[in-house]
Amino acid sequence: MGALPPPSSAGAGGTPTTTAVPLAGDPGGSTGGQSPDGLQAGLKNRHLSMIAIGGVIGAGLFVGSGAGIAAAGPGILLSYALTGLLVVLVMRMLGEMAAASPTSGSFSAYADRAMGRWAGFTIGWLYWFFWSVVLAVEATAAASILTGWVPAVPQWAWALLVMIVLTGTNLISVGSFGEFEFWFAGIKVVAIVIFIVVGAMAIFGLPPGDDPVGVANLTGHGGFLPHGPGAILSGMLLVVFSFMGSEIVTLAASEAPNPVQAVRKAVNSVIWRIALFYLGSIGVIVTLLPWNDKAVAKSPYVAVLESLDIPYAGTVMDIVVLTAVLSCLNSGLYTASRMAFSLGERGDAPKSFATVNKGGVPAVAIYASVAFGFVATIFSYTSKDTVFQFLLNSSGAVALFVWLVICFSQLRMRRTIERETPERLTVRMWLYPWLTYATIAMIVFVVGYMFYDPDGRQQMVLSVIAAVVVLAIGLLLDRRRPRERDAVGAKGA
Image (spheres, rainbow, N blue to C red):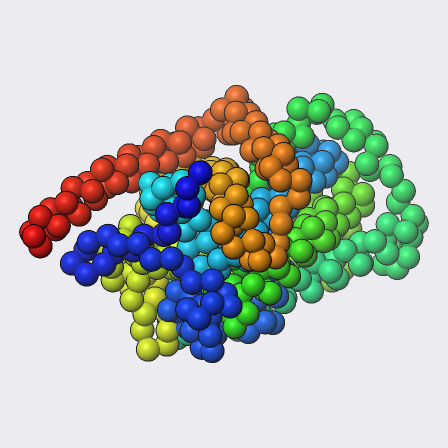
């Protein structure tokens, strides 16, 4: 097998050229205040650490976990464990590539090199689409909470305000984004840790509990799997998208002084992060309360706190959920803009997307991402059950597509790195290539089950349609590019 082609970028006059993304430690890599991509390396180590830790804690954990518990009972722990295992394996593969070549395009740039421009184009735009839709979802969720506190202000006005404020933080500098995300993520982490500690004390009969709970709620009320083993897979479909965001640190690492070290730390810590925040907190819920309690389905974390007579439990969780929502909105805008920036660099998006302002941030890419988010937010109010629902469903399975692309990219890039620059394999996928093949099989199985499951079928069908449309555009552009190069060459002759 020959060497892989380096990522492409648009040259002068729109003529595609190829330029390798500089690696950390190279003369063209991250030095001083500039990242390998030309972005400002303004993220500090503490920013990256908290982005990595908080990246797996989304608002879906606090609110959406209730639906998973209702679907699978205490067996939802197995759903989270299996999905978490997938994330750990995928992050290990992504970490291997990111440590060898940190770039703001992350897996999209690696797919570009490993499988061709069509692959980088397709997964990059799908990922951008996903996070741009998430902006609308999170802005609407934040507005709903804020309207409950200050009903005099219309909900749409709150949505507009939070979008404007967080757009401003992203435009100022990457350090501004990092600082906001540091505190947002910090609040989420502290809240989850306190919840687990208080819940564990109650489980063992310590204050604020009364008597040891034991395993009555885990084995009673129909047993550990009240709906049968199949419910584990149904639960996976409900929780799989809660883990989207773990990969953000590999995009952000390119804007840190030491991206390789940041990636290595993030990848090595993903196991305990998932075990603590997901399995730990969900374990507390299903141990302390019956899984079929209506309060658990509605808001599991509030239900636990209220059962322990914690004062102002609802308000406290509203604050935590609002923080999680704002964190997701903040990081979602950052992620969408950096993917758009990378696509612009490679000639797969308008060249203006790859320009930066005086603060070293891709302002045009940010404006484009937030503009789509604004439009989607408007649809969330005017066409909630039609256009907005279509946007949600057609972007819903992107996480699985991203994971598959990471697996296939790592299969090929690993061989190339071993042959050309083995010293850059500072993070290695376990049991390569067999564990990579096993991960691909697991993801394909989940995709197949989504087609089979009535609740997941529409989302998967629409997501596949969206992917096919973007893929067709990518293949069409790929076919036109050689002709453009030939025309430019003939003109020059």
